[in-house]
Image (cartoon, rainbow, N blue to C red):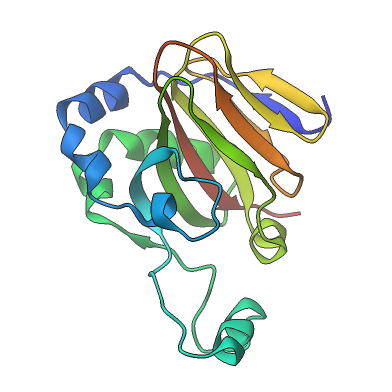
Amino acid sequence: MKHFHFLPPADVNALVLAIKRRPDLWKEDTYLRDYPQGPFGEIESIMLRFPEKRVFDQEEELEKYKQGESHFDQHESINYPAFDILHEARSLVFGLMALVQGERLGRVMINKIAPGGQIYPHADTPEHTEYYTRFHVVLQSAPGCILRADDEQIDMRTGDVFWFNNKLEHEVINNSAFDRISMVVDIKVKK
């Protein structure tokens, strides 16, 4: 496979149990779901780490931000309250950072797709994909839940940990009877 690389599987049971004990966390942040023209209208998210959400008054300000010319660091993510609440995620995240010899931790999000739902086809922004490497830790999945990147696809399985090329058009389709829950972890690694 050229668009995916699997790492050793993870024991995700403690984090899944913690999430099930705190279902209110799915309603805390609707940023991705509500993002205009975004591909995430059918998901729920728990933000553990994410950039500070900003509204730009002018198009020039947004362009400077994208090009790294403003005093705001577009690659800086901050801890959100859920990262302290779901402390079980820390060993998975920092274990992955150690495994890939990560230099900087970016976004960490837990995304849930209900049966029949999907994340629509999209490619992540070049500014982000050039800086960070994207990893997934599959927390809950069942046969029929697929992730496609360009011309390849995988069946996501609980405990899978993998890199995939998010520069390419990709999508997730949940054709299973269960929620698909996956933790996205962006890590800056030496190239």
